[in-house]
Length: 170
Ligand code: FES
Image (cartoon, rainbow, N blue to C red):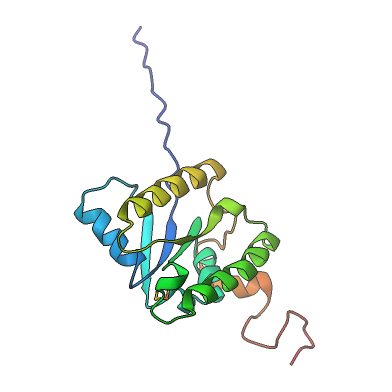
């Protein structure tokens, strides 16, 4: 009798991390990390923005809605922001957003704010490595819309009408 041994494959969870990167600092840092052939996980999808202050909290929530396992907002250092107060605005937005994300029941590891200049390619690679490891530990996002964004209104009411979820709201 021939015994078949079937090896179980353990597939490691690969998080999808959306990175909002400022055009003047973090985006070049990512570029420089690539040019210097620094190793970091390929789990990120970078969205370039002209300033950290441009990252509207709704962008982050939308990323989670569309299935991101984590979101990184990466801006210039305060004194380097090309638009003077953009990096500070990003920090203020992030602080408010953190509360909303906690209310949604998401773990703190799923969101991060970093200040990375163009000269800090090493830091960029390190942050991505750390974040990927942390998100691997907490697992896939608990936010599920059956992969169909159009299913969203059925689950939370119609977001296009009124200011809240009450039926009577105009
Ligand atoms: Fe980079 Fe404002 S220009 S955060």
